[in-house]
Structure formats: structure tokens, C-alpha cells
Image (cartoon, rainbow, N blue to C red; front, side, top):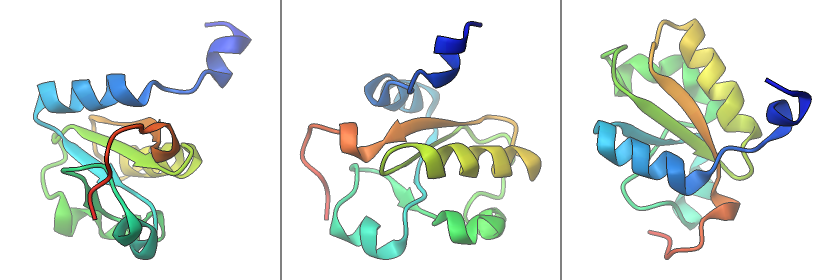
Length: 105
């Protein structure tokens, strides 16, 4: 892995396809007001500020989780915290700012 790979942002659309193929959970970790203003269709909201409550929404630690936020920083932190909580299949797929299709409200 090169230094450039470290700074490379995930491809949101690739992540959405992998989420669909895996039957995973598309997790929006933005705050509730951001989620209400517009979200990727099919996503569920669990703000990063409440990530410790993940087991109420996601009781199975084997569930594939694909997290996104606005630009990708919160989703990276959320994925790391979820892994620390024992979730074995979670990743950040970037930010909704890269989403070019219609948002759900």
C-alpha cells in the first residue's frame, strides 16, 4: 500500500453496489436533521454521536454494514468504532456529497 492509497477516498457507488450484493445495511451516520434533509434511498440513520447504541439497530455483529456521511470522515470513525464494538463486516463507503442521483426525503 502506497502513501497515495492511504489518502484515496472510497468510491461511493462501488460501495453501494457491494452493499446491495451483500444484502447489507446502508448506514447514514450523519445527524438526524441532516438525514431528514435528504438521504440515499434505503439507508437507515444512526448518528456517529449515538454509535454506541448500534446493538439496538444492528444486533447481529456479522451483518455487513456500509457507512456513509457527508464527506467520509464521520463514516470512517463510525466504522472503526463499530469494529471496536465487535462488528466484523463494516466499512466506510465515503460521503453523500458524491451521490449524483435523487435523494430520498
